[in-house]
Amino acid sequence: QLQLVESGGALVQPGGSLRLSCAASGGTMEHYAIVWIRQAPGKEEYEGVSCINVLGQSTNTADSVKDRFTVSRDNAKSTVYLQMNSLKPEDTATYYCAARALSCTLTTPSRLQFEYPYWGQGTQVTVSS
Image 1 (cartoon, rainbow, N blue to C red):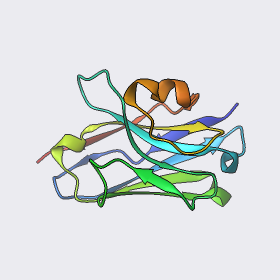
Image 2: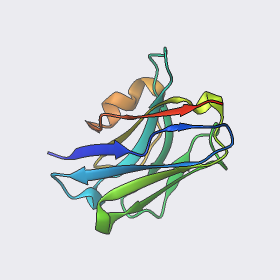
Image 3: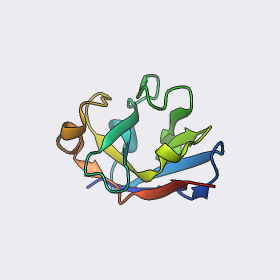
């Protein structure tokens, strides 16, 4: 059973940067597309932020973070990264990585839990001065 563990969340000032990591175990990560998902405080809805296909040559990033967030992967290290630059207070959320053995898709918020069967426990990102 694939297990995912996120790390790298922190409190950061607006305009700052963070790099989140998603480490996989219990399975071969290179067989899975990975998506970064976030849930803002007080909101039930998830937002698909950025996803990457199994070989890393194709990505899809939400308009809300395009040009600021970049997803990448190192299959040799079984790790996927989310580089977040120019952070804004509205980026404050719990960030999850999730996996599925199909192509990368951001899908719709209501379908994320159905499309991606494997989830990590999340890491908190807070953007505040």
